Length: 222
Ligand code: G16
Ligand code: MG
Image (cartoon, rainbow, N blue to C red):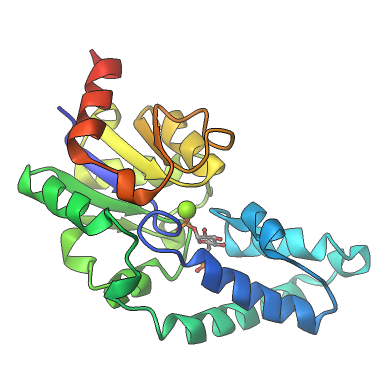
């Protein structure tokens, strides 16, 4: 039996990707760069500065902006993002997530968050989910973002659970890689094409079922 679940935030617990997109879009417009929702897929699961670099790379003359200017742009995006977050509420928790979290608690297992976002605590607060989490790993607690496993290793260490007794749930390819590299059982939420490297996969969060995940875990861990 596993002892802990580590959840990604954006794309698993709630769809903040849309807010990230709107905030980046507003910033990109201001500096004369065009981005669309398809491009936004590439920004999922990766950190704020890395996302900015990817956007600036679309306009080569902006790539060599000073570190200061880049930090200003990132701060501006975050300001836009936080404005959008104000309307985030429990109704924005993705389908199937609350029942899964409640079932995990009921079975006496631990729950942690493993997010690349510096706004993770705030998002959980607004979703009224903070109390379900034994530990929260956000971007402030790690130095190496996904696909590096540090986010998940840090969560497991804080929970005091061996890595192979942890299950990581992720929607981003880089996130699934991070879970695998951590030596944990990976659950992917998304397409077969994007997440073929996950140990177990569903298309959408409403298909996440506690017993099925435990069954799949049991099949690989024996
Ligand atoms: C999330 C999003 C990313 C975002 C990153 C940093 O990661 O998926 O698109 O760039 O957080 O967010 P912030 O600017 O709030 O620090 P995750 O790991 O929760 O999927
Ligand atoms: Mg994600």
